[in-house]
Length: 501
Image 1: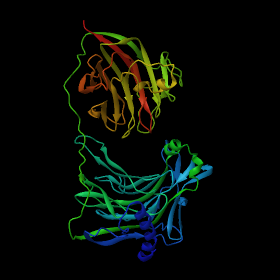
Image 2: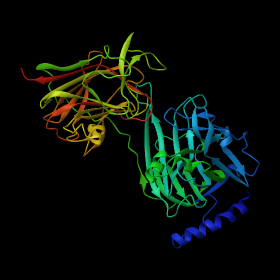
Image 3: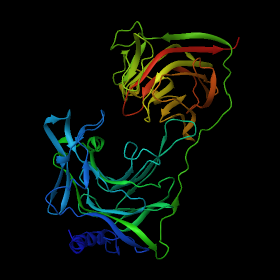
Image 4: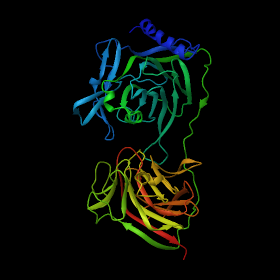
């Protein structure tokens, strides 16, 4: 599609926007006027199909927790428009009942510039236009980052996000950091085409909607070439929220008129931008020891799962949610077996198991265990339970977060975090990924604080935190997979009450 023809299509969209936002200027299908630019890449989708010399496609099912695959055939070009079509696969394809689309530039990459697409949302889809500096064979060296120019959700939501990795000194794996802002457009974005763009330079990342800057973020590390991507994902939670059948998205598509990329030649005058946002990389909050772990120790229970039949739970352990179960521990992928012929507790995403104490603990508590939790993903959540009615199905399912919420400790990426009302999630220690770890938490229920010890014999003090709320007594412990992918494994759990000699 020529630039002149593209502008003809934009004019009605501008008129519609004028009705909603009085005195809005016409849409500009060109880069911002504060600089001089040169066109470095464009695809107007004027052919009979996707130019596979320019684009590469995902070709298979997504992760285990996803409902769709993404295939080249889901990218259809018709009348100068790329349609990324969502389909119900009959029969299932690649083990998935549904399919969507994902393409990226095969050879083209660029560092800095203005990246723009003219798009129309598909309902109940994650409509994405993004830039990626991926990790892997193509870009083995850092920095690695992702600039989500738009992740659009119906009817008006536009998510503008930067994901990037920082590798701490002495660590073998990098930490993922994200800075996101959600913004609502003044019109339903599945009704017509709109312009989505980002200006990326050595100082800032600036997001645009219909030619207007709507977010400005200081550039933390994004100083390397990135490729250009278009993709869709089905949003089941939005469908559930609106009481709409999943079959509604069969045939729904994100439509893309064109993609254009520019490189800045020179600045002409200072731009008018939103206030500059600065993302500060979170750091570990260090605390001294808070809980004395000396005194009389009374073992409340010990569980190595060896006497439990696979698929079951030990006596006195109860299901809160999902299907927590004991399994035979075998090596698989990056995960090594903890011990030969060993059984472990396995938690899939959202699986939750708890064990109540015979007598609530009001003083100090020691919780010790081995664990394995997924790499670079939210994983295990360990909590001390308040008093709740376990005959109530809803309270049972949410008992990790009902009553007096005590210690609330979560494995997030490579950090251990606690959640407290005034501070939200706070990092207090690191943990090793893709290996079995040994942990020991010593908690003072009355004071509402805890310490964390690690190492082979769990004697190395690593940090600590506070309870979410002051707990009158700990009635039990809960273990939950608080992430969305992978499995959490636990073994050799020992819980003791501590009292003064």
